[in-house]
Amino acid sequence: MIQTGLRLMEVDRRQSLEMGVARSISQAYYLIGDRGEARRWIRRHLRAHPDDAQARELKSRISKLRKPAD
Image (tube, rainbow, N blue to C red; front, side, top):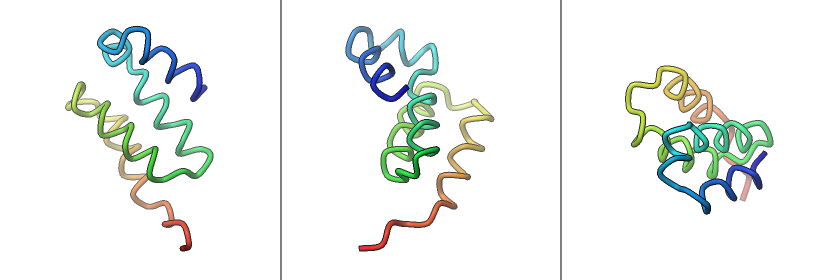
């Protein structure tokens, strides 16, 4: 999912953002526990879709993930 999403962003960034690819990438990173990348991609999605309630809920869940131990 992540590789496909990243490739779509390379091919046509604007259209991919419109279609919610950044949110999908964020969800995938969230599922594997990569808090930093999940947060980065959900922020990108929310810049394009500020009223997306599902994205805001995902952002909240991401914030609750434990930070990786150093």
